[in-house]
Image (cartoon, rainbow, N blue to C red; front, side):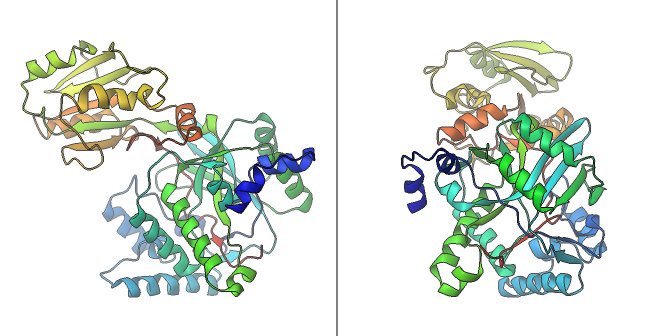
Length: 431
């Protein structure tokens, strides 16, 4: 884009040069719960809930955003979009939600068990995504991006922030922590037992202080929400393309993000269950595996404690696997990932899983469900085998993103996540 080309230009003005390097992060007028408890409005993450639970939440809480994100009932597409739009307009009319009068940053703390992460909600710029200052690590599917775009254009609003990580920065951490001594505007436990606190910061001096401090962020890394980001790019292009009026009245480039320091972004393991041994006997399978792995029978479930260690569960027995093979090119970032070690030295050559994304013989189970979830899945199908994998490091994810590469499918599970519907971003805001 033209902006990307300008950013690469040499500039003798130090301050201007710094502005070109940094990521653009701005306050915005968020729309948030007003005449209704936040817990009744926010849309729970479907990662932890059954369809039955989702239907129950939707029916119990009339104003819940699930009715917009996933309207219930067997409606035709046009009717579904209309139902969502009507519900959103009804929420605003009844002041169930209300847009802030002043530009604001939102300080956001999420806790789950002994884990706490403190970050902020702000408006990023889609051009920083196009210029690779905002970096992704996943492949995206066009159909899913278009579905998300249709959903957001329908109500001209981004309901869920895109979850991003930024390089650890003590100065930013200290500034954000200084606001947590104030009474939070929201303080509640969500459906998955994660605890959420939000501070709405609109004081002009505070806004200037936060804006100045955030200029030290040169790159943002998408943790969760690659399809939302793609959808926001589609929306931005549509607004710029159709009609001068939309250009004048809308911020075409704004994207609502929830950003947390990399060291606080928690990644769980993403484990695998394979339906069968690809026609091999247990003895033959173990023999082939020994070529690249040291195998030890274990009397306890194996949760790997370091890279190149794996757990394996088969026929009611746990094994510890230690990778002892040779990676042909140690400078190949992707080959060094544990997820690719198990892919390249076991799942593909021995178990015959050629297409990780689409093979019906493979199932993925997030580590937040525990090792018992792996045992249960394998015990249901006697010939199947499960592998527990050491979680990806956020540094690995960032390195992959920095090099314009993509992580293997189903290799990162970020949890806890920012909530949808706590703060939403309506597009009809001035540039």
